[in-house]
Image (cartoon, rainbow, N blue to C red; front, side):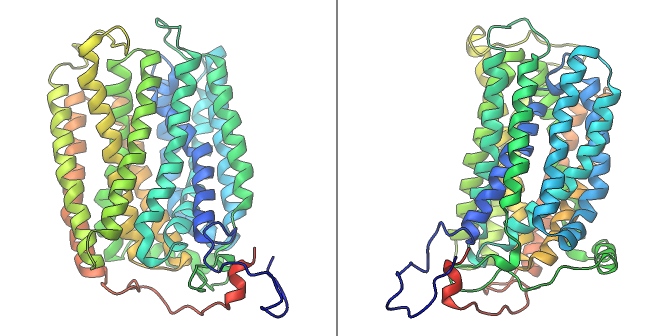
Length: 461
């Protein structure tokens, strides 16, 4: 709460306190913790290949259902966020993750995939809500000149969930070197974390109550109406800025199927997959911090920082996918290699492990770069929730297609080539978007002036 009365007689509380509850840093950290517990654990579950099962068909079909509904509700999720606000939107989204993990616990006993597919479709709805809200918070709450830093903070906390989530199957299945499916405790552990994330989401403040250190509020908008959001969402499909983002959005989850199932799932045994995931998601923390620094501090000009960041990611991406090609030439669906173990395979383990680590590094840099570009297009949460929802919707449509591509046993090499081509196509289009739409002053192109907030409000919760 804020203090009252004469400032000289009242306790002096620093205005620029990093850890105010209503500061952008605390709120972005909280949404990071929410994603640590829910999508972070989901990522660890998916990263094991086949959801921790020997037969990847059930995970492929559940993921297809998930990303199909995610594609729809991701796009409309921004509108839902603008109507319901962050707490209800995020809590509803988080609750569906628990059900999804539970469906694999059920499958462990009954080998019936119907529940997993239905749970996947429901999770797609919830994930659409969660990620639209997350995108609005992460891109609109921070100061305009520090969005890259805040995105890297969020991404580091979020991907720590993947690190911890990778440790769960690694520890619980450490002595099961010949096992094909993870044990019940693995899924129960995921469900506990996901339940905690749903509760943390209730601590997120609405944007009108979040105050930056300079006294400005993040936004002064009132919650929207259904008709307003429907019209605004439909306009996104004719928005040239969003159209330039489509290839990047489509490709940014498309490669997960190849990396999780056909690199980690095919080349390594069960316990080593969990070991690898600790480093895959750990690499994401490193990548997000690195690209965040480049996008905020490399040049004085914001446009120059954006173009430089895209160039760095393009060069690294080209090198990493070239390494993926060299690795893929060694095996195929018809010519599989013996499973690698992190303890027993010696030097044979190092190369594929390092490639998988680099895939994680690239994923974080690529997605953080796209989020930074989106955040540079506007500053109010109303607009950015729609932009973020559109991005997640297109991203999920790509993922839905990718999981079915794998279900239909398309060759590993074809999947690699498509992934490499899609990411390569996105770089020049993002560069064009930054050049045309990102301004060098502190106000994004779509930003409307905000009212300053009295200094005393900075200390209020």
